[in-house]
Amino acid sequence: MSRTIIISDIHGCFNTLQELLHTISYTAQDHLVVLGDLTDRGPRSKEVLDLFLSIQQKGYPLTLLRGNHEVMLMDALRDRELEPRWIRAGGDTTLKSLGINTVRDIPIRYIQMIHHMLDYYEDEDAIYVHAALNFSIADPFSDIEFMHWQREMIVDPVKTGGRPVIHGHTPLLLTSIEELIRNREKRHEINVDNGCVFNKEGMNQLLAYFPKTNHFVVQKNSD
Image (cartoon, rainbow, N blue to C red; front, side, top):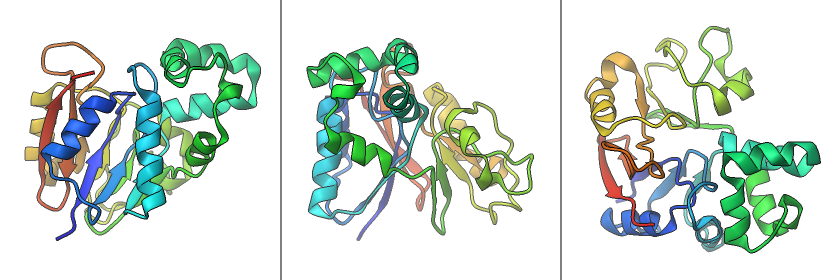
């Protein structure tokens, strides 16, 4: 039986990602939805990118969303003056992982994958986005910048058709994530970012969330 599996904010933690996929017995029938921030900060961004390229090439169900770190990378590629911003945000570790010195040396296969990422995705169970949706405007799906960067959101269940918004971007303690999951019917929001790259109590884990059954699995950072 296929499952929808949500993972966000991997940030170059390839070993942890591999272990998490093993723990949840990920198969080619599962639909993996990744909510952005695949790279930067963690040590193995290249391996993360290669894994998702391999999954795509095999034709397995995979949906990749664009996070603010993908946005910064593409901005740096477009405008040389913006590269230092990306570097400061963790792009330096991505360059090191790739064995290159500048964003312009990133192989085209990775750039093409990032270019084709979506800003949001939706199915019958939920709406998926990296950061948030702007429910203060008539069409929340028209504010693309909000989807990548915003850290606060009050979900309007009328505009979502009663579906929760599943996102990452803002690292939360595991206890806070558990509370959101318990109160999904009330809050209509679940943040699945447990701060995999942050060595803090209650964080430093990568999380896989299953929207159909409203449960999750965590994997301690091993990178």
